[in-house]
Length: 374
Image (tube, rainbow, N blue to C red; front, side, top):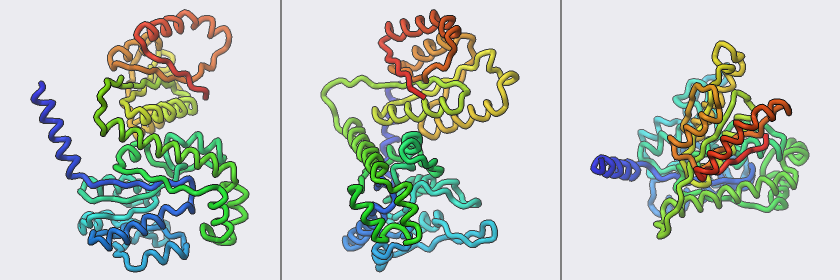
């Protein structure tokens, strides 16, 4: 048994050494200078004799950024016809064939055109890393999956293109590109972010000072969290540290389940911990009784949990509380996460004994309980 574990560990080290290194720039919004910084770094690498190439960069016709492309080797983009238009995408195969030491790939959250190998650009980046090529990329804080609800609450904008949190965990280095709200708004007014026709609308919507301040705080916290995770995983600690294991308990309620999944994912990411999502199918929620739309919501939420790095547990049981207790024992759970119950007073009274049993059991086993508002 020990020999198998040792061999598996050594194989993991070999595979990781063959994988490319991944550097990720994070910003609080468009216009903070992520692409500009990546291109500056590309020039510095080139001057030091490193084979660096531009796989994909989006300049948004910003003069300062366009000027920095001069002198950098660019891998031509792949042309595709989509809905009668010729569009360009990152040429994944060309990058892998050319095998530069470092490739710059912008807009990590981008959705690829239909007909591409991968649905999302972050999946392209994973393929490039697996091929042993180092990648420098960039993303805005609002595109991180587990922050979706917080960003929506701050900006009232439903960001559709998102990356799973595990892409941050994949990064060997995470760098925050920071500006004050005043500096960012100044850049916008000077026409350094958007065309003049879009400035007024941007100032009235996304680029409000309070929005920027809150997004800036999210970005700073996210990078600080990633640094702490690296320290805890890569620096040998002399003291024994309790390893957290989270269990997110969800129902077929679409919105509540999404909130629980995203918030648990953030906790697990913060502690660099294994986490699980538990769905208990009671007789009332059998496939013959549950509505088709609820079944679809459930499948989508379980898919979201998988993307965010959870292990899915689906069980059939008459008692949800007993099922939770059983899974806690089997998977050595340290923290159970669930949503605030939306019950009538009569249901609360009827469920009191069951809930008390769950609380008592969790308490005896030294398992924490977190109830999220939703």
